[in-house]
Image 1 (cartoon, rainbow, N blue to C red):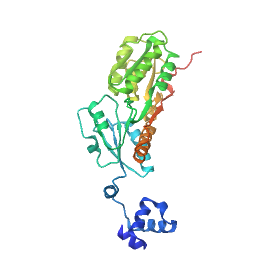
Image 2 (cartoon, rainbow, N blue to C red):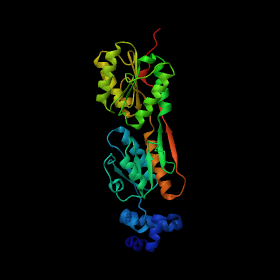
Image 3 (cartoon, one colour):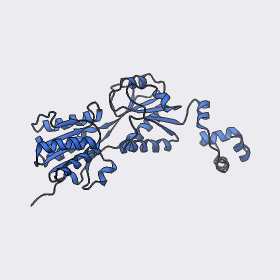
Length: 330
């Protein structure tokens, strides 16, 4: 900073103001300092700045995993919003029951966004005890003083089930979900059962099958369903696009056609959905916006620590493509 000040003919205090509060500096002076910074290749040390101001320009985001397009899309939105607001993002996937040290895992940060997809008492106690701002993603923990970003699974799930029921009998509709304890799977399964219940079908284990978010599980479960239901038109709502792909593989293995014999709808609207042939009908989850909203909410909490807690609920939406729309016969 002293080198920049000397070269630009200003004080170090002026350089500091240009970097942190440029509106306090005359425009021609600020422009001269910025040119000098560029010429000298000066980069402020965010850790040193944090020690001086007791505020870093670093944010943490802790996820159950970072593998797959679901999480990469969330991170893309979070990182873009952090950069837009002048922050840097540190990512951790060390959020599993029985593990501790969340805040130390993400390092020297001003705040952390935490995604909870399953019950995790150890982590939740750490969130409650934390002295830094936190935002919880993907679960309504029932604490009115905690900021949270939620995905509203109901509208998209309901639209998907009603869409399948347009061409499939209720007792031939199935839900293939992820882990039983997963919050999203539980919500989607509940809406599925409610929709079929309104058509007079009491949904049991045969129509709601829970396992894991994987192509392999979709293939295994799809084979079981299709073996039991022969060639009758079958409708399957999968809890994510990978499961849906596995179901389609099972249909192909059995010589069944999608969508003539098997109507399939996935969930998330990942890139996989548009690459399939036929294109995969799916429920779009706005994951990039979930990430961006989490960062916006976290920065707002950092700026105004005593403000009321925020709860943001982002809707899901059915996207109809070829896997669920059989051609009408004349």
